[in-house]
Image 1 (tube, rainbow, N blue to C red):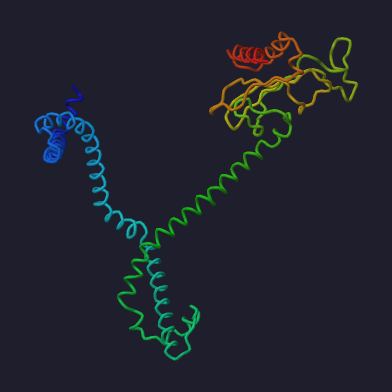
Image 2: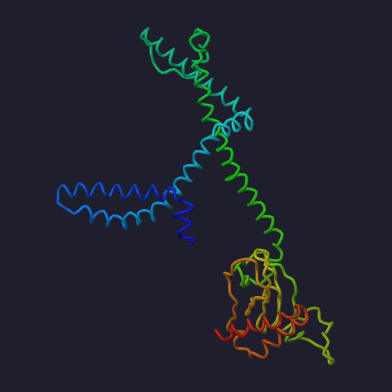
Length: 341
């Protein structure tokens, strides 16, 4: 029903013209073939019906879009003078006036240069003459020769072209230089903002979501799975020693300022823990706001540990610092990672 409405109700005039036009065209060639080859015109007239219908089905949508395009194009052409008037004389009147003066002046200098060239040639002293020489000898030329209606008309036409070119050049400078400098300074400021955090983080740490290694802001850190190297009988740290390093694991939570993802990192058990020790496990804790390019990872040192011990360390950290409900997500990430490896 929609098919019939489209061709025979909405576009009935176009359908009628296309059908009878194509049918007449086919019939005309059939008459020529009948005269030259002796074909039966009655059979050809009946055979032309399906061919004309096929042309109708194809040409009516094409013709409709062509008419719409021409209609829109004519409307644009009809509005073009008003748009040009607004551009030159309302939006940029000062710029057009300056362009007109500049173009008229350059045209005047070209005319003066040509006049001096012809004058010098008439005395046999012709040659190239610079604009500076033209300016020095400009008073020798009759004003009636230079200042003519054609001079202002040429200046007007040149200003119509000169003003858009200058505007395009200024816009290009803003886009490729000014905006790029602003973006560079913003990026530099962001890098400096998280410089101290990036210096102190583990050297092999990258965002598990977007794979960026900079702008990683520390949120939480936990020393677990070990303890101070020197302790008292009751298990408390021995404060008599000025240097009492921690032996164990470090689990930390970082927020990536590129994609807003939050990741958890863990080190294998090491002696004398330092903040910049290389991590052996990285798991996404909260997805970022961009397409994921990075991935979770686990190193050989961590793979040698028992799964229950890794789960215990992560549970201790998540239960202390994490949000309710994210523990299951982290454990699923760990299971998937261990199964892949």
